[in-house]
Length: 148
Image (cartoon, rainbow, N blue to C red; front, side):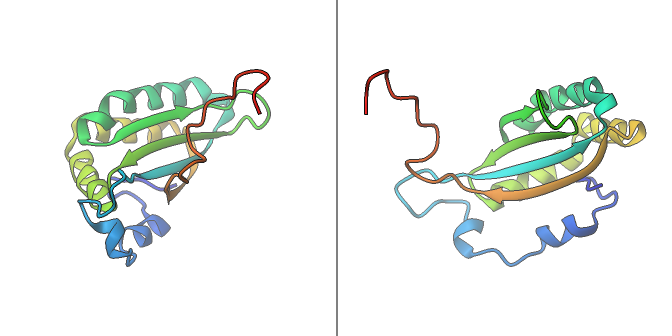
């Protein structure tokens, strides 16, 4: 399992020390558009602790914005696979993400939320990827009926 508070970081530590392109690390974007980096977290959860994971995710609803992340949302399994959940958190850049992590480590409620998840063994595995939206293919509304 991967954690953000210096607990077992294993492969996650490698992500933090990778050499990212300077454009991603810059705190100010150089293009005219606002570009965001989204941390896409895939959780393998204990399906018998769905409600405990829901509470864990709800706690992040208070913590993440306070620490500087833009919470896109947490998503629980609804139908189909019952042991996979997702969390999406957006940042202006990887530099913004690093500042967020620093605040998160200092936040008492964040530490407690992590510790509770570990103690209850709610999360069996956690994977992270940093992605960016594709212009013209993100947040596109459904076309009105009959439109082509």
